[in-house]
Length: 233
Image (cartoon, rainbow, N blue to C red; front, side, top):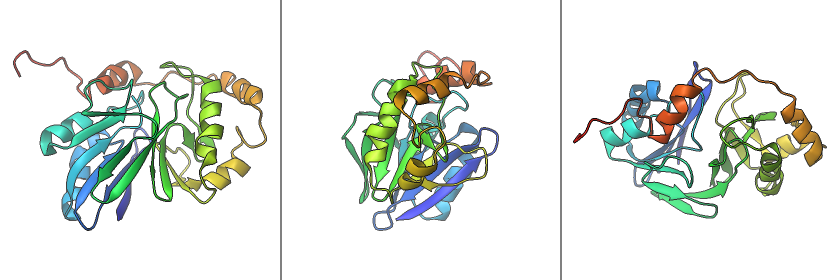
């Protein structure tokens, strides 16, 4: 398996490129619109063919590249049920998606948003904004729920083996990855915290509104389209 972790500095978003070395099929997870050319260049340089794009949820801080990548490569767009209606494949907990010989298992991980999913691939899990390095996604918009996120993290993600590598959708402090065991022991919002304590922590964050939310959310529900479709196009 080929694996690359890519970064968008404006939104602090990680995009992940996974390629099957035998079939040369590849997937991108959480691509950013402004990075389309970079991502396609990397796919070509590695001799891969992009067949799938996975979004972990409808993002509020950047616009997805999924629609543009589909137009340019004819790849399939994969998203959680309840997310972007324009996706080719809407997945639910327990579903699997094959990219060559790479098998992605879908984990429903709502709480940050109601459509959030994570993708488990062997010994690593791509958690979007559900679980981050020593943190987690906010829960104060898009039908987010602190209680639901606590249940998701403790009841789904923390049930994975401790050695499972966690690749988050964002990081703002220079971290690139963590593990399930590390987050169980050291995540300051979760380690040793009850559900009620976690909810209190999340309710007290008082974070500023995402700068791009008014553009990003409707665009991402349309697979990255930022303008209304032209009739007959």
